[in-house]
Length: 269
DNA sequence: AAGTAGACCAACCGCGTCAAT
DNA sequence: TATTGACGCGGTTGGTCTACT
Image (cartoon, rainbow, N blue to C red):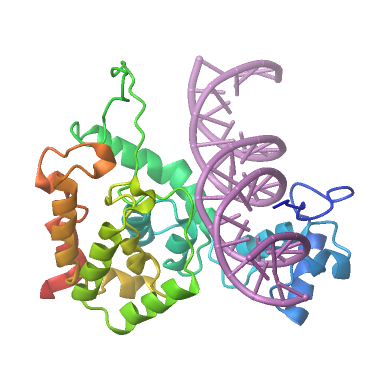
């Protein structure tokens, strides 16, 4: 289907927003609330497209946004969530109160990725694999891919939401395991083996209600139920799921180390 | 002081999805 | 059922600042 441009580009301002533009947008949203972004340029006289207005509001003007000074706790959480969810910035941001997906994405790209790469370079057997058909050169390009990378987000359809709600109401590990088995049984397109990387059943973690947990609650959440998942991951990964390579030991294959689970679960683990 | 490289981050772009018609 | 507009997302770009030579 054809796709029309989001807005007429002629005559629109581009680049940094001015204080006046910000004020116009704030005033409009104060009166009319969020949404109907397409109407904003027409009704306020702003020479910006609706998309720009939305982005500006969500990332900078919204009153409850916290900017800069990402704490150690937040950084730890971003690292864990990124390992869990991949580049699903909006989901990660949903677990970090008052942080935007754009800020987290930028922070990851500018700061955390390097840290992760530095850490991985100290672990010679993990992820540092040569590209098929090419030998490692002197400066191998280290592409750190999270276990659950999905380059494009998948949204919940209504059916999936139903599923998700069931899981939330009855968050038993059994249900999760069965869901995982179902996912394993219908190999997508008949091509992809179900792996840590493409197993959509992990969305049950990704799709916990945003705002359901505060940062502190998330960090202190009861992750003991994940121990069952952890063993599944070990099983899957021992079958060679991590980016197609076989981990050298089951310990390396585990998404969550015992220490991580212990940390997350607290003393009750 | 001038030039350059790298880091940071705000904003833009293209695409997938949803909902209304 | 097909079409269309709007929204939301992740990836990318480009401007600005800072450190270094």
